[in-house]
Image: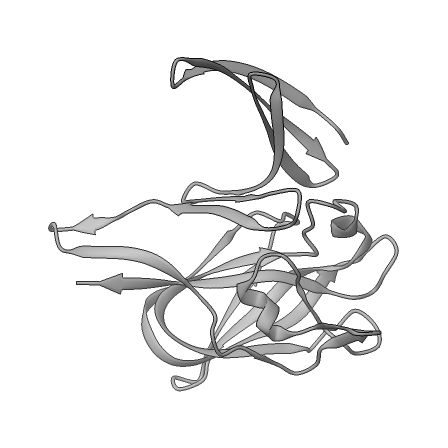
Length: 215
C-alpha cells in the first residue's frame, strides 16, 4: 500500500512543503524547504509523536504534558532493566531485550516458531505502559510485514499476582496499555498470539515505555 498527501505551510518566512505517505504499514513524513528534502518515519498516537530519520536514529520524541492542579506532570520513561526469556542471534547481531529502549533495532524472541509464551520482564512505577510492535526500520520498511508482531499479550503485575490481557492492533504506532491504578514492582509481558510475518516467524517488539508521574 502506498498513499500520499501534500500540504504547504509558512515556517520562518520560508515556504515549507510536507507530504505524508505510507509504505506497507509504516507512515513517513517528507519535509522540503528551499529544495532540501528529508524523510522521517513517524510513530504517532493521540499522545505521542516520534520521528526517526533515514539512518534509523530517533531524532524527535514528544508527548502531551499533563498537569493536575498545576503540580503533577506526566512523562514517559524507557526501560532500563528489561530481561527476556530468549533473544535472537544472527551472526554478530543480537536482538537483545536492551533494544527495547532504543527504537532503532527491535527485541526479537529466539525460539523456534512464533515465540508464543516468550516473556519480557522489567521493574517500573507506573499506571500504564506504551507498547511499540514490530521490526520498525526507516531504511527497510518491508521488515515490519515480513516479521511477526504480537497480537495478544498478557501483562502480569508480579507483586500483586494480577493479570491483564490486551488485544493489540497490527500497527507500529504506540499502543497504550492501561492497568487502571498505580503499581510499583516487577512486570512481565507474555506473548499469547501474533500476526504472522509474511517471510519470517520471528516475533519483534520495537520498544516499550511507561508513564511516570512527578509532583
